[in-house]
Length: 337
Ligand code: P6P
Image (tube, rainbow, N blue to C red; front, side, top):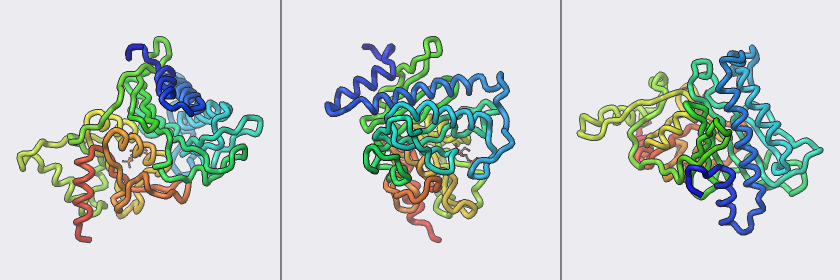
């Protein structure tokens, strides 16, 4: 079947054939996720029309103001995914604790962690937002309710990771450990069609993405690195562009396609940075490494090697084109404290 009509369902089934022991559970799980993505995309794209923009007046577990679409997307993910019989447990960036599978449903062998609508503080300004997801195999005994330990596995144990970016079009990008592939939603007939096969992030970055408003709080090595990028053309090197949307999914998606580095560092105000290890950093790190890039915490660790200690822990992240991450790692390792 040519790419132009390769639906995500067909692609997943083709990929499954490469694994003779595959039971089809993971494929069904990914298909369920693509359905949830279509529904969220529909709501995100008409939010301004049906008055589900704006704040609910509540605050989430992180003390952040909650958007109506946050609630909708979180509930959509839970209700779309909790009855397929493929999951033992879920956890959401919007929920304090783990999300149990209702007793009436079969308990599966997978674990789903997700950020239902990342970047949603931007949505009233029509800025691209996204859903990020991460799938692990359970480590607790089959047939029993999943546990928090199932959710606190290191990122290198992921079997699937991906995101859906709701932008000028809706694109679902995922990896199952065999490359990174992108599917664009054709709204005419509601199918995700293969549009980006085997994505590789350019080794050289042309873009750096960081909130420079926090400059005065940064560690010295990071300040020197950003200055080095800004002086690139003085040294006869390819100048860099600063691009920062403030929506991780959109920033990472652009850098994945064009080449770039995204940084949310630890600084004097946020000693562990802002982004969550389970729901943002691990899935993006799996994807970017699969696409040929790197993802580190700036403390000598690969993101994927970090052992999570709590559901909502935050970690610093330097992620993107290999050369750029190598370079910032060098500046940080040589910094005088
Ligand atoms: P700041 C959105 O709120 C988010 O979680 C990520 O999507 C984004 O990269 C980051 O926070 C932006 O944070 O502090 O630069 O506004």
